[in-house]
Amino acid sequence: MKPNRKKKSMRITEADYVLAQRRAARLEEIAAHGKPVSFRTALHKSKKIYSRKRLKKSDLPLL
Image (cartoon, rainbow, N blue to C red; front, side, top):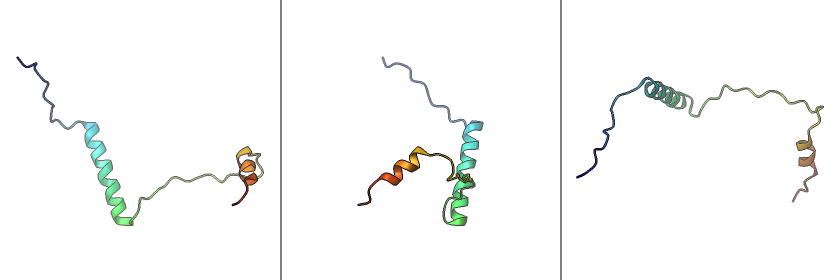
């Protein structure tokens, strides 16, 4: 005898709906502008602040 398997429920949850709407909006945005639009702004990093990473980067020899 085969064990009883659970059937997948075909209900659309609120989380699924929100995810689908966000994906659709993103695809429309890409279609309208030709590329993904990013609204994140990067803060300007001051060169006066000590940065070990920047110093190590300038020490690398150019090939």
